Image 1 (cartoon, one colour):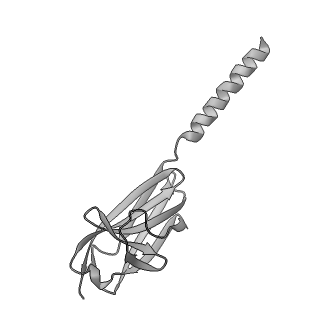
Image 2: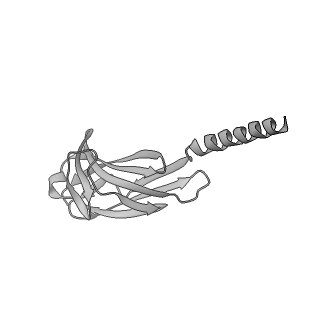
Image 3: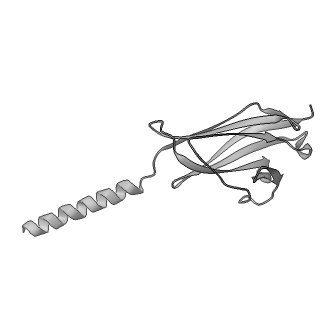
Length: 138
């Protein structure tokens, strides 16, 4: 009888441990930009921060995209914004906790109201962070 109780306790611990491991870690991700207005060929900064509920930095990766309406029109490829149309296009950028970058908007973006988007992936969570931007001539 003792062996049966031990087996039941071990099974219960296994189920509890597996269920706890399956629960995704709460993630807090934020994005800030230097302005909602960007000027052609001038530095425009963005910062993405990814933390857990306790405020600890999390390892993450992100893909940067520019949307016109809901359509991807540009994405970050290696070192610059390039023309894209595939929602899965772009270079993944790995970081832990915080990533700040600079974009110089190309002339083709001038006069448009766009949305700057960071798709952030950490563990099993995927988050979309968005910020409006209107690109103007200097």
